[in-house]
Length: 200
Image (cartoon, rainbow, N blue to C red; front, side):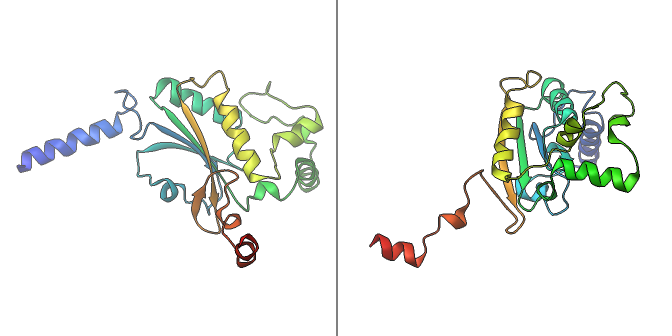
C-alpha cells in the first residue's frame, strides 16, 4: 500500500470513528455492558473488549436502574446494539449494608431528610416520598447469583428492550479475576479426597 493510500485509509477510519453516530455505525460488537463501578472489575479484560467495541454502563452493583433502562433502550433501538451482558461481582459493596441502614447513615451524616430531596435534579417530579421506597432505591442485595439472574430478567422483560436482543449475565470473581455463570461455582464442584473415597 502506497503512502497516499495509507493516509487516505487513516483519514477514512478517523472519520468513521468520529462521526459513527451520524453515520449510523454501531459499536464494533453491537454490545451494551452493564457492570459495577467497582475499580476491581476489569470489564474490558474480562470480556476481551477494545476501545469502540461496546457501550459500557457502570453503577453501584451493576443493577438495572431507570438510567440503565434509558441507556439500554437508546442503544438497542437506535444504535444497532443486539446483545446485553450484565456483569455483577463477588465482594460487592452493595451487599455490606441494607437500604434502611444507608438511608439512616446518610441522613445522620448530611443532616437532611432524604424524602425531601430530588433524586434527579433535572426532573423534580421524579421523587420518592416513602422512606421505604428510598431504602429500596439504593438497591442493596444479599446474594450475587440471585441478583444477577434478576437483572437479566428485568432487561429481558422490559417493554423498551426489543425482543430480539439477547441478554446474558455473568459474575466477575474478584478473587480469581474471571467470569462465571450464576450458581456455577467451580470450587464447590471440585472433588475432595473425602468425596472420592466416599464414592468408591
